[in-house]
Length: 83
Image (cartoon, rainbow, N blue to C red; front, side, top):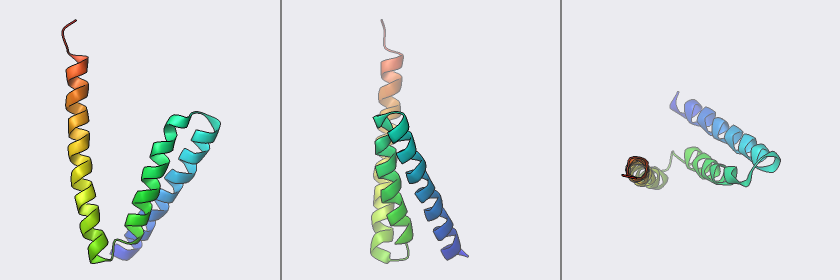
């Protein structure tokens, strides 16, 4: 069951890559980071059965959480600063 879910999730990540490539080509260059992140996540999902890759993905998840938390804090500080 879990192996099938991993493959389906990797297929979704592949779809994200295709859609963001199309958007980057047709619209704006700002979508390119999404494409790179989706490619990295797709590779990590496909290799998730390995113990070493699993530990790496957990560390990346933790780092991404703190990066997003810092960006939220910074955005609220910028949004609500006194004029």
